[in-house]
Length: 428
Image (tube, rainbow, N blue to C red; front, side, top):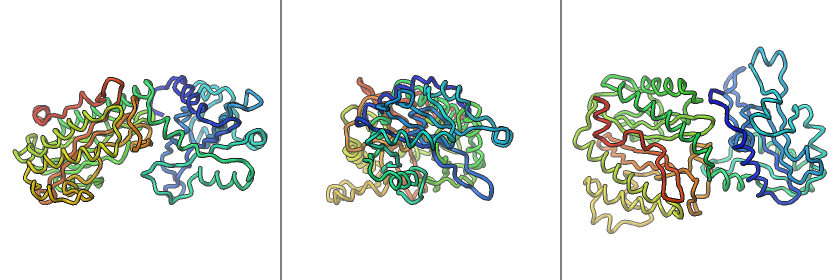
């Protein structure tokens, strides 16, 4: 890991919150992610299951955590199983956690090697009544692959058919959505690294530069500031590529007079930033480009004000749509009479603004949370309106990351240039 060590207090408190949600005589079993094959004898870079990380801070493959608050033997109320290293692993793969390091990271005292799992686990199963199993229940995810949690659940239910099984995912969805002070600090670090990358490219972009060269500048700044890398595949979309919402070929030249839509963020300690800006290749927007940019910025500012305690995400998106309608009419992209007669289930603004304005942010870029419940203090959302005009080859998106607090909200990216005039000034 490139990031500096995290205090185990964060994970100790997270486990306390998690255990309070378990039924009496319950045991929860949380697994590390699979290592996914890339080709031949290679795996993709390992990325920890965010629920495992949230509970333990352990950032290593082949790890298992068991929480059993009512275990008859106190030493087994929190148990961590780790891959045991050896000389061969040390030479070919590098360092793995020692038990002492795992304790310092997680605050878990009972740590065993994986080879002990088969003898300890059956004993614990005999003393619990309910078993919480984890699964990926992000409502943006469509289940296709038989990932580790699903394989484990099937095997466990076959071996122990008489236990009562519970879903751990709803607990994580509730708890992970509300960030602690220390989690906000980690998110702020990710945002600050992202700011450094953005400022770097403002001085780098000019006509003729390639999208991939901009991407290279970004990852350079990320790595030199201890980020793990990109929080997601970066979008460096010049000209009409910006009309493609998830464009990430990043292989074209940036031409004079075009606008580049940038959507990228740093991952730091598994926490993610998510930034969007749209900047002029030549260092100055055309009047039309600036008009569209400022329209998006007004929608951004109005939307951000609605990200407060008590707001419901789905209702918020509808209100943002009304604000966007007005701006699109002002840009002569929609006719107000047509809007007055539109089908409310298929609003006309969707032609130019077809995605949502905000999503949960945290250990996942599209983090888990309940979009049908009221926003609470401690939640973090993106705010990312955009206007995409295919016939003009122009796409503008602006995005910052917003923390909900008891007294309003805090823009975690408030220091990142956002006004068109400031962006032009910095580029020149």
